[in-house]
Image (cartoon, rainbow over the protein chains, first blue to last red):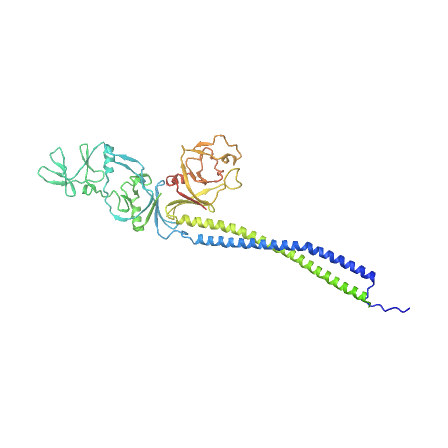
Length: 284
Length: 212
């Protein structure tokens, strides 16, 4: 029988059907996988985009936070200046001379008692507080004289039950021996009947007392300038306050002053050397 | 080859090419999905790690800002550094007095506020005769029942400084509600009694207090 030679590519109908069905099956299967993967791939891409967006946003926040940290670190006030300053604690009666965080000098002091004094028959009242806050050394005094304020005489009169007599220009106070107390220039004098005048030698503890009367010399007179009371030096803080030495060293370490800051005489000598005019003084 | 055989072969080739294309597309999509998910995970982890660092940097920036402000602000203020447990009384940016402080550690009892960094002002300075409402966690924090009446005279000691919307500054007690030296009131700062006595006349209503 003569048969047509079979080509290798020639496919018989049953084989073709089987192969075509198999390939269609594979194709459908793959089509299904593609159809299933397409939304998943889209979701993955969207997820990635969102995650990248989040990362970028956090990066921007990190940059902003870093900037604000740099700004905060660069802000003024990182470290105190080089200026030395005095600190006084009223509660502890202590003084420090500091620079930055170093203590250059420290000692005990006496500060205000916090007490009050009222002048009988007057509205005048004093409170003996050391002022809290920021002061400064306005000037430095050597051998400062103390011009006692009125409260010194009011306090003494109260303590010794004396009557106060505030001496004024043109006023005289007669004495039992016929002489009188009067003002002559910048002195309080004892004027004899013959006109001779002898200036009084007044100082702390030796005020002018006649009988039960305490004579208060006017401000500016030599009899209202007491030497030695404030020690050898004073750092004047303004408004009548100062850091000074004392003639009562036993008062140091206590709340004993009328508002000034007292230190021992050897300490005020050291402070006078160490502290320049303009130094800030912080009292708390 | 017959014409039907050639047509069959051509169809098979076309079908084969289609299947191959679908297979390639499926492979590509599979890679895209996997890579996309992996990359998203990496990006998210990176964002989280950056987020942690941002939070830390923000905290650092807050501390640095408060510290700088405390030194730059004129006048009197109290600054408390939580990292070193130290309070400093400043005037015009200069340190006048440094004081140790203590704060509670560990989990907070119910209702107790966390000690938050920030700028506060003094709202009240109470003395031993002033009535203070002692918080419940002063007792519950130690496993004790809180009494019904918690408004006590000197309840938080002889000196207590209340900050507006902020913590209490109080001192160790020799006796009374908080006489337990091992217990620091959560949400409060505990000072040495002497330090708080020294601070008392200096802290007025409105005095700034920086906690950083």
